[in-house]
Image (cartoon, rainbow, N blue to C red; front, side, top):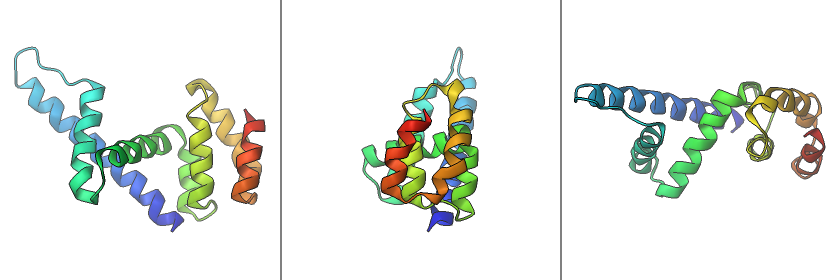
Length: 132
């Protein structure tokens, strides 16, 4: 299951890149046309709704989490894909990462992954607060 969750995150992030590129190309064909990051995010989420049979809110959440894993927590994603983390453990790390400044994320991720992978979800949830 861990591998599936990791691959889904990678595929969702890749879809976002494709949608962004296509929207930017379409906008560039119009005078003064640009695509903001928010619009690209919304367009990608709208693609995910029928593709994965999700609600709009669930699609936005999945996209945000996928982008965070791929772009900001690559080691967590790698550990998840290798089966070293469960999806629940990765979710706990991801949830905490959302509260941390971007410049502190690499150090946070490194520290959490040193011991966090060996902790069961409840202990990790408590312990992750101490890594900050």
